Length: 545
Picture: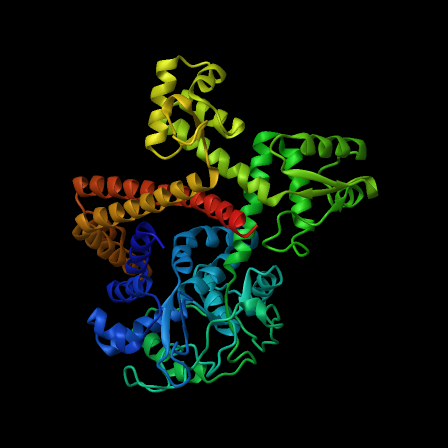
């Protein structure tokens, strides 16, 4: 784990869970697996706060715990995982994807599970139904059955999965505490090393939940608050048949969806919409049969692809064959041919597609930072692998002085490497070939670290802007709350106008400028995260493939 990853993880933990959790989480990232006594001693945080922080991290899957390394009876050790913390950056994208695929109900289900870490199905359905009912017109409400149906659809498509079974109690409120609360005491761990969700057979099995009714509106009066508190104990004791079965978001499934969408979008930009629809159909057909780490999809015959195309695309069979031939012959090699049976067997080259997308990203970065001529030299080195300076000048058709300056600039930024090949063992400069080359994988790793640094800078800038205008933001929130309560109680328009005038015109302008600036920073974070996802996927596919 690099310094940039550690810094970004610390910022994400602090923003979402507070200073104490961030301090405990970053300490574990730096130090590796540690027991409770050591964490308390080295962080200087009280026992109670450390336990609560570990509970939060375990609840959100950012921390795992296991038996001590000294054998049975040794203190339980805790360890945080950097990858899981960095996924917090992608939360808006997960929620937006759920909204696109499953509407407002799917959006709220994913949002609730991301906020809570894990929940039972009945609890999620109730919470989401209440939130949807709150935003509906008076007299309308959301039925539990509708939310349950969407929840089941998310499980069927593997966007949700059961949490791995624990070695002790099923109570997720206190999974991180050892059996003996004494710091560093020798005790049997409640749970062993966290297994993967797919390692047990009921991972995607939806339990039979007896949940009948509709969502309820929140009562705004004090009496209503008292009524809710009085009924809370009764509601908590209700059983629905899914007690102890907790659900979490399956991030890997979302990542496969993002990868497929990136490939489809690249095909649409390179060729046309029909070609992208053919690739989309191939990816959809092989979703279940293809392993997440596979280099390519399972072979599909042209006949199967033709039958599975959407009815809105009225493509004759000869035209489909032409499109498939065009995709196979394309230099990007998104689609490959695996045989001739069934009218031709075709596959989507997943790893090659990711490599080409990463390559296009690197070329784009070079062009934006150093200009089109440097990008031309960079593309030339990617294609030709090894070239001398004179060959670069000739092939790129760039004057010698400019080519030399550009090569040295790219070399100083570690985007280009210089390889020495001596004719004799003494490495004399006059008898040595100096070849320029681009190593795509190390360059992608370097750019990935730059992206982590960029996101951390964006988050720090956004937090600084918010802190500088804290007083004005608090005043705006108070006035909005007053307006909402007045509107709910049916206040006169004059009263509403009087409250609105509590914010002066210059303050309104300052607020508008601040919101615009923060929106730009948020948008930039999401755009950089798309680049991070592409580069991470490429690095992972290359190292595992």
